[in-house]
Length: 354
Image (cartoon, rainbow, N blue to C red; front, side, top):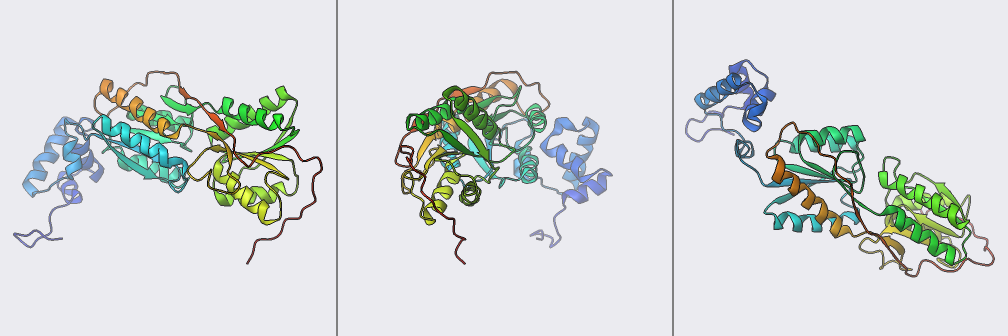
């Protein structure tokens, strides 16, 4: 790129930094976060930049004493339909409050998540962390820097919005007990998932209270392929019913065991979690614990905007403790669950084609 009038390249942030004898990051902060740079240094940087004809990023200019009206939602995996309605609800809430929502997909990677948070910190006014895999300590540090809300997870001293996982799992186990199932397998999700831990604990407690045996297999990726892996593990130690961490694992599990000639629910009953788009399209239609996904997204953004109305612009801040917002879960009974078979039919897993 060259300047239209002189043919010379326009000055860069590195040129300004060299002329001032400071690091490029200091120049960046002088434009994007002026309060984080000593006043004399910031004044010198702006003076040199003006003399050199340096033009900062318009986003950075917008941050000098004013709001961007941007908030971010960081999602662990946008290919998971779980996020479709969450994002829709979040977008609606943001629009109602005259904000624009930015969405970042971090592909189940803590490193990518950290990078996304670093890159958006100077642009957005607040962040919704949707099913974050970061540690509690990291999340609390983020919340001290700028307003944040955690979705589908509880972190002490950080505003959170969660589904009632305990009640939802209890309803699933009660439903299977009513169908006379006596042993249930829980197909676990990612080890770093807060929801996975809550669902497994609730399954154990419900099983104990109802006199059922509940065992755990996994962890498995929260995907269709994760469900296929769960089916292969299940083939080594079978029960008449399973509850999966999420609907994608449940669907992958059903597809795989059915390809082996296993009847659902004739041989094994299957329950999922979340009631994602498509859960009622598969065959058989999936019994699942429904989360109010759009309401989760809307509530998270509403809580975030409430913070923004009280804390002002970004900067170091003290997080005010607040009880997690608990949204209800409901069991959707469909065709993938049925009575416990009186006899367990023999079946053999077959290797995948190709």
